[in-house]
Length: 141
Ligand SMILES: [Zn+2]
Image (cartoon, rainbow, N blue to C red; front, side, top):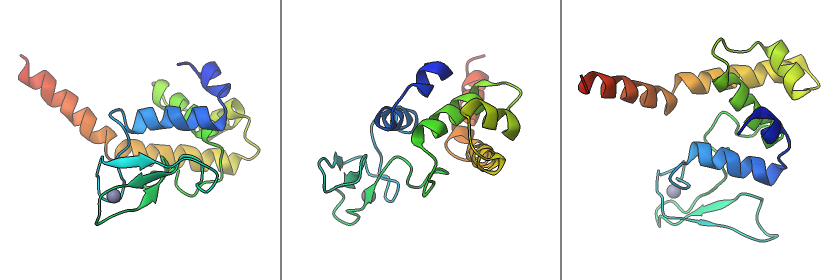
């Protein structure tokens, strides 16, 4: 997947793409971490809605709930592009570059996205997967 391919996605495709990144083994409820979930289909539900089947939880969520993308009005395809750009460029990317690449209307939006993604990259689960890789290397000497 490259940035041009991501840029051609519609919102549903971008959501699927973000889901495979966030949940490589299938959706996980952000409220109770349960994997027993059901996709909600049809007009009555917001797109991408998933229902948790844990009897003590029963919350609905989408891929953005509990992430730095939650309650953002920025299209998911822009988020998908921003993740890709910030994670794939070794020296990082300035908000100005991000604004230009994503054709965002305002510098403030670009800054906010870059800021949130950097926060997410410092925390779980990326930090854990990084430390996991380091430990793996140490164990295999
Ligand atoms: Zn749940």
